[in-house]
Image (cartoon, rainbow, N blue to C red; front, side, top):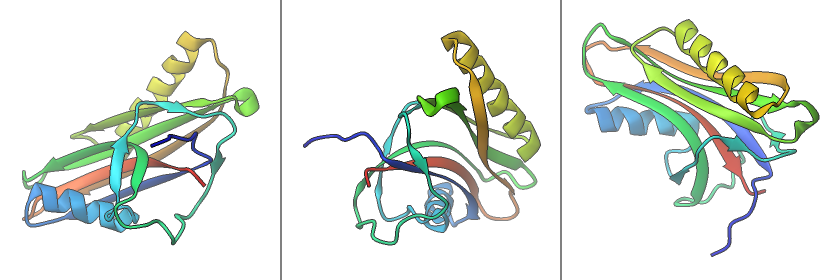
Length: 158
C-alpha cells in the first residue's frame, strides 16, 4: 500500500441524535456524507498548497480509507449542550497549515474561540505567519435521546 499527499480538503460539521451515543455519532457522520467510509484519524498538519473544496465528491467508494482530522463528543444527559470544533490555520504563502480540535460542554462561540486560540499558539511556536483561519463547529442540546456533535477536515487524494 502506498500513501499519497492529499490534494484537496473540506471542512464539515454536523450533529445528530440516535438510539445510543454510537448511533448518534454514526448519524452525524451520515449527515456529513462520510458515514460509509473508514476514517483514518490524522494529527494536525495540513499539506502545502492543498485545495479547499465546498462539496464532497459523489464518487467516494464505500469502505474507502479516508484521512480525517476530527473532534467529536457524545452525550445522553438531557439539557446538556455539547459542541465539537476544528480550527484551521493556513500559513502565508500556503506552505502548509495546522488543525486543532476541541469538544466539550459549551456553546459554538466558546468552542470556536478555543480553537482559534489554539491555532494562533501553534503558529506562534513554529514561527509561522497566519494568513487565514477557518472553523467548523457543530452544537446540539441533548433532549430525550443521545446526541453527538462532530467537526471534521476530510482530506482527499484526488
